[in-house]
Image 1 (cartoon, rainbow, N blue to C red):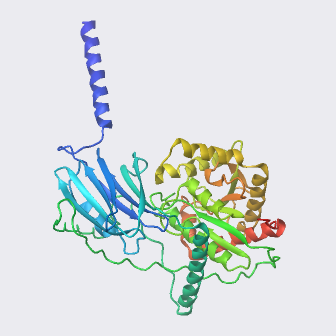
Image 2 (image 1 turned 30 degrees about the vertical axis):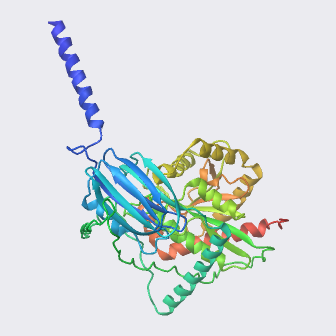
Image 3 (image 1 turned 90 degrees about the horizontal axis):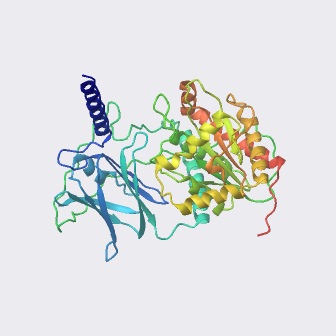
Length: 475
């Protein structure tokens, strides 16, 4: 009898283990084909990212055609064309610096061919990303230019765009036009509430086998201009800077990485880009000051690339702008962080550093041994002098930010933020407010608060330079 009971328990245990294992397996269609969950295209001057999010096993082959017309070809094995995949045709924008059109065809059974007609030569990088957060499996194609834009040219272009934004905004203000609201976002692969789903794009007839003809795409709406910075009434008479100084402004997250999401659905990446551009406009309107934005649109920039951009223009300061979330919705207030070579100054600082450092996992980057060695070397090179200067810069900012928002902590906190590891640039990370707090989320959406926050960060920069004049460079 006892033997029978033991056998029954062993059978139930083994059956439960088998069932649990089956529940962990990816969902695959009965015919063994993967299903496309969502397609996304993130155009930027630096590179264009194409993301194919899917729910099952998917193999690929890719090659670049340079004879005559430039083309980038991808063959996806284990897939049939569906409405979601066809949406990729309409996702390519006419102002994309790299892609002129996209074509899709069923090359052969179970194999879909995607052809990107290119505007310039590219050096593609391919990533296969495992599920993380709200994302399923992702196949990512980053189309980089073979010749990178010169960092100084990038800086000058952004200054010109800043001046154009200010001119347009002044005209809008004279005409009494209100500022546009933030963009509406939805979870990956879903439609906005109350919206009508985009109808499937009909598959064009196939001419050459496996290469469908090009299809024109509609023009997107023009981007909304940024408001012009009005004079600061409470700005003290700071001394004129002895030389041109460059401030690198780093709007956090972007593209595939939305950052924190507020209770009302506000994306951190949108808020910080607005504040970053307002800050850049303020700096660019100041004699002997200029600003470099590490990203000036909705696209993802790896953490190490943000640091590299700042160093490539020999930035005097690095300011990373965020609007983070915490595990408790009642958390509120602004914070400023500097790098720590030891431990974090608080548990909250350590938690935030870990969260911000995970941006590369969500956004998706190639992580190899060389990259890890470079990141470790940058951290080892960070000097005590750089950290001390960062603490001075952060303290000057807290003095100014405290006039418009409650401070989460009255002093500059420190933690091991990867984005602050520039060894030769005073670097701080500003948490403008907690987007996870419903009240602060509403303030972050306010154009008045956005401008006030940008102005206060700017005044902190000016106060820092008034107390610590930049040294003249010999080279």
